[in-house]
Amino acid sequence: MAFDDRSRLDPSQVEDRRGQRVGTQIAVGGGGLGLIILVVALLFGVNPSSLGIPQTVPTPISSDNPGSFGNLEEECQTGADANAREDCRVVGFVNSIQAFWDEEFARQGASYTPATLVLFTDATEAACGYASAAVGPFYCPQDQQVYLDLSFFEELRTRFGAQGGSFAVAYVLAHEYGHHIQNLVGTLDAAGARDTGPTSDAVMIELQADCLAGIWIHHATETGYLTAVTEEEIIQSLDAAAAVGDDRIQRQTQGYVSPETWTHGSSEQRQMALMDGVQSGDLETCSTPGWDS
Image (cartoon, rainbow, N blue to C red; front, side, top):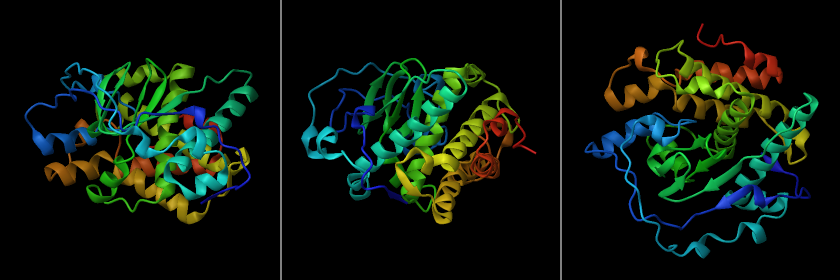
């Protein structure tokens, strides 16, 4: 994956809270690391309060050397910067994803509302509640923002066996922005349903977000930011999707698979949904659930 060195980045689409701390992180009960792993299993688009995680209200305190992370406004200006730095690469992905959806909404005769990406470390405050890095990336419908701690990708590699790579990051971001699209068009409401299982509404919402991520991947180079999307990069995104399948996480964390409790879909379902979008590039592909068959 390479960004066009001459493309202009818009770092205003990313709010950088890295290095800022909150006084008290989310209370995760008495489960320790085991519970944190189970919380990570519920990532991708579910805000912390909807997970039923007990929360405490932290007291914001001063930043902890935020300057050590650099200044996105000054340092992430071009595609060349995205090719050189991870955080600038994230800016580039967000710019590309939102450029595609802005154009797609306009093509449909509608207006796209941008969503800010919030980068944070350890814990942060959202309209959905206070979130720790343990919940993984998520989209908060209340403030229409995506939240990401970049340390998640190391967790994805070391705990859940993903091979990593820059396009695994792209897939995660595109999935979360898929939830933003669902929110804008009114289909995210079904995510509040508490039903579970391979064919549940909760799973269908997640699979549709995977499909929408695939739609962006199909059209990514048309946005002018990326020069090409290679087969290897598509494999990276598929590998990341498989790593966060309910069955794979359950097998690794509890030693057995219980499909009746799935909320995000199996590894196979998630890969199939993503590939549906990648291969077709057509939004109609994502409007008809069928990835559970």
